[in-house]
Length: 413
Image (cartoon, rainbow, N blue to C red; front, top):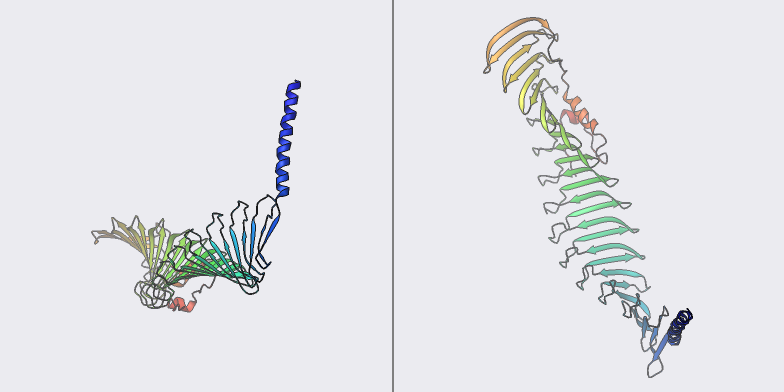
């Protein structure tokens, strides 16, 4: 027992002596050293800033006694990783090894007041700068970037009060900027692209709260928007397009959660919408046509699995169905008519191979399928635009009654 206690005391004494010698050695290490030239002028000094017994800051002076260079070991591993260069005693350049491997990957340049005006950065470790930042009043105002390290700038970021204001990008790496993004309070509000490399914008996207709400596309390169897409929750809600290049909209489509539900079309290109298509699960289920050109639908066709199932028509323009046609295997086999236009069927016809084979005169009876009134083109157009009124409100051009009569006004940029 006594031997164990004695052994423990000896170990403690040895450890204390070791620590004492190390502390004494540190206390004997100078915190700074100064070196002078043959004229007695200071030429260099060394400092131990963290009192670990090793110098970590080296300052070099000119013959006039002004600081020329400072080398710093910021991570205290015994090697400098931060170099500061002075001119006439004022800081004008700084070089940094951010990875602490001795290789310089950051260059800072300062103005006459000692404020930073430019920074260069090597982000891939090849010894060459690939990011260039410009400063004003100590804040970065522009960043030029070579993201594919081919020696050419392919992205330019403009900043205002520390926030991104505008971004220019060369998306195809041909040396020309073709994508331009605009920000407000740090959030993306608009993006323009020259996808055809024609020197003009052909796709413009509008954002609200960072979400895409509207896109305008110039499909034929004439400088005008031929297709406008509206989004809700970043899903396509409506599409308007000038499919003929006549400077007016002739196709409007509505979508629900990105799936096509309705299409309004100027099928004959006369400047008036005349055909409505309704879809379910991306399949056509109903079609309505204005066959008289009076801006009112008068023919309705129903489809199932892509085949015509039945047809309804208004022959006297009162918006009520007066002809019902049924189809089998895509061929007409029965037709019912309301010849008195009172909403009741009074005649029935039978067909085979599209040829009339029989006829019945009926006491006036109610149709088997409750008829739907025909709507006007105006009503359907309003239904489509109002249903998606929330989509693309930023700058959306509403279609007026006049433009509905002649759909699709010119959409110049």
